[in-house]
Length: 228
Length: 411
Ligand SMILES: Nc1ncnc2c1ncn2[C@@H]1O[C@H](COP(=O)(O)OP(=O)(O)OP(=O)(O)O)[C@@H](O)[C@H]1O
Ligand SMILES: [Mg+2]
Image 1 (cartoon, chains in turn yellow, blue):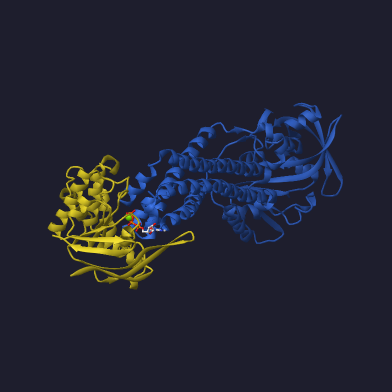
Image 2: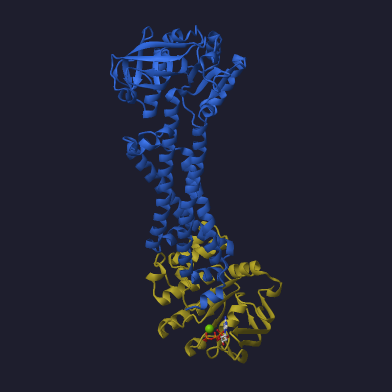
């Protein structure tokens, strides 16, 4: 069953007088519970693609459907609500609110989602345990390592069972060992909880864990390979 | 959690927070403190003026105020006494006076004065006279040919207690009446002008000299409590007018008797609010600037929040909550400091005598006792709180308007 479906996505940016064609017609269908890696050289359009799927950026043309929600019919408020309830985000860095502890960062999104207080705390603890942060609930982001911070971000992204989790180079700021641990953890969440992941990466090792590898170049899909 | 978040965000940059806090505290403190000085000044001006023979309310013959001569005096005093007893709250006091322009002279000097005939035992309770004797004695009701004069008058006439003074005026028959009095006491007043202007004799002596019989020039009434807004006085005067039911008498409150003071009170209130506004504008710029700085440093975070699905109004709410905390904290501290500093100086007052020489005619007191009005505190607090929140909306909207992709790309 398709959870993400994009058709003929085009996106151009103006940089001064230069027009940059970031995406030149992307068709991508991602099934539920997939673990998809977006690969491609720098500037190929990976971040742009993830932003468009996440409703953070709008395509110039083409359609996006996420979990049966067609973006063309939605305004900013609808998109924000969709992001809040259906999409989890993990960015390359600066994922967390610095003044909140690990558990508070996870709870905060649930608060915005309207989850009752008692439930918030239990679920946050459960998910932090799942991502391997048992006992580190009350640490502030500054008191966590880069890998631990990314784990909190993953925990926050998946805590409310979103339709998809979009991760833009989640391991780029980590050393390879920590990066691999993070991907392993994500993979575990993918298999155990059936969370759909779409992530971009430059790292060959990370790509190896993907069930599907989509390679983009100059705004076009040049290779789409189902692995595993 | 919103509250925790706001509270922690405030203390992310303690130095900046303290700068804003100081601005608010100093602003509010200055509002309260200056307000208290002004209110103290106002109250004392009114009190001084009232006790300098004005009273809360006065009754005169309808022609007396335009032409204060003995012919324009009031008869039928029993009727007024009855009306007063019937309408006024217990604690209200009044006294009768004869008041006429006269010439005082001795062997060397002569000057125009106001000769006031008083009921000594009643007068002492309603005006300054009798309470500020600095030497000699006050008048007794049965005193014959005795007079009391002010300290400055005594100096000007170069005379002393026991000496004679001739008073000369026109009597009810339009004849020149003159009478010799012996000085028995000296009074002081807030201003030298008052000390030179008024001389006091028992009312019976004045009436005799001026051939007035039982008629009098005025009744001065003091209500149990001064209402600086003049509302109580106006009500009391209205009741009195109805009870007297005779428009040959006019009843006037201190606000009508002292139009200058009334105008001054209105003006000073206006200036106080202008001051509030000026303080606020300075403070407002500080708040906007510092908040903007804080917001710009956190743009990536606001971008993240929006990416996660937070709505713009929620971000505005967050920023405004932070400002709200700061403002409340600053306002409360400012108010407390204002109270403390007022309490500290209220005991001894502020000595204005150096200034007083030039300003006596306004009734500005020699020693100023500040006074805090609840209304001023509330207005100052609300002005800062509401306008503070209003100006913080600008940085808040900036934060809410961030585009997540742009904000997050800057790394
Ligand atoms: N906001 C923007 N304004 C102008 N140009 C942009 C903007 N965002 C992306 N681009 C351009 O679009 C193209 C695709 O960028 P994008 O960030 O999607 O690439 P990427 O594959 O994520 O690269 P990287 O691997 O370096 O992260 C690039 O040429 C980039 O310069
Ligand atoms: Mg990128």
